[in-house]
Image (tube, rainbow, N blue to C red):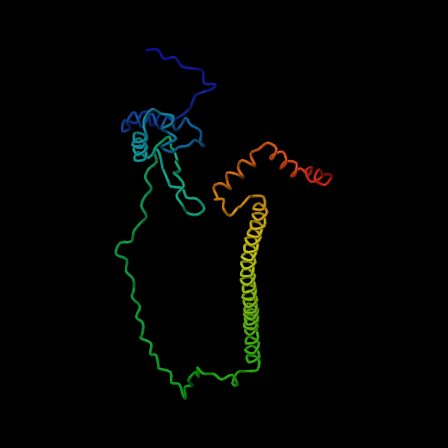
Length: 265
């Protein structure tokens, strides 16, 4: 059988044959360990990182990692950040299996001497003439410094009260002014309504006076107007104002020429 090898100048890995000769390891574990030994030390040795460069899924790679851990080729520990939270796993890879760490020695049936302690005797302290606290301390009994502090605090508390009283007085005066202004407004609105009614009345009286005056002028040119019914008067006015000469005269009057001709005549 011929084996064609490449020159070992680049793209090769030097590793021990121990795991390759180990019959206790499966081919999957041997291949994964060989691949991990060929990777740089700063590689992402997590299950996700290893699954990205292999065809197998994370579950298969997890089983191979566990097999290598049991055989002693890989030691995996959990890393924590500055706050103590779990950050990831730290892998330590060995070309030859490491023996398991020996357990800490245990003491069989340790004997501890029980020291005997004498019960201390506690005597009840006797208080002669106990004084009771007086909860109702009079202001006269306070020291001068404490009394001055109390007076100062009462003075400080009095400032907001005075300010509140002044504000309430201003608000009361403002409300009174508002009521006076509203009363004046209502009175002005009432007077406005009265004036509007008076204007309507005067307008109606002027119209009545105008109708009476002009109706009287019209009756002057009608023979026996009291004998004519209203329908005949309407017909007469309609025929009169539909004549061309009457319209021209009206237009001249509104234009200001008719009055000048009448004055010249």
